[in-house]
Length: 305
Image (cartoon, rainbow, N blue to C red; front, side, top):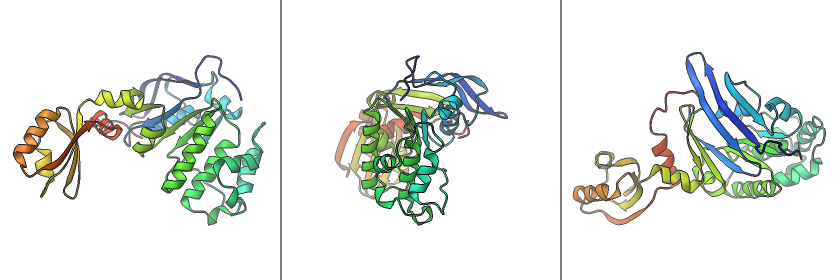
């Protein structure tokens, strides 16, 4: 395991990437310390994938600099310091799981023993199964083993638990904690906000190619301000809830409503006036999902993913 010399696992300074007239990433500054588990969040078009591609050396920034453990991304990849689990990563159908992981291990100078990578990914029991016989969740675990086998200092994960069931997700994140306990770093992009809320040390939220929030889950929630109101509302309608003052987002499930409000007192008074039959009212702090909706509500169409 190599250690960074400049105190950062990942460092982006003034990074920008454009495709023609479209600004995919604009003036991004980001430093991630060794050992952090960081969730990279944002709506489609926020610039997450482009940012990850630049970290992996798959594309070069038009402006600014990217370094991984003080090296250029390509050099860090060649040194086996980065393991990537990409959602679109293809497995060879005719190879077994063991052969797939072993093939990747041969590309690195100091890989983990293949049995160790299989064990850490929790796929020892399917090691002799061919890739075309795997479920979606099993394929994700194989991609995880492929990312681990170089024994990297940094894992970059794109939607790592897609297609996994609840139990598999829980086991996956247990493996992640074992990985970071050794001082390694994890950056993951996900649409499962509850995973970011539960497992990330830090949340980086992007919108329209820029970072709009960066901090712990509690700090990001605080940036959004406001409160969440949950209630049972007979004969509730979208138009009724949308007309309430100070509401920034809402969700209806049957006769239950959950809404985010920038001024819960004003919203609640209006709700009681418009719907006197409302009951079982609960008011709480905005969760990460509410903060996400509030902080990414504007300008979502200005960038490409």
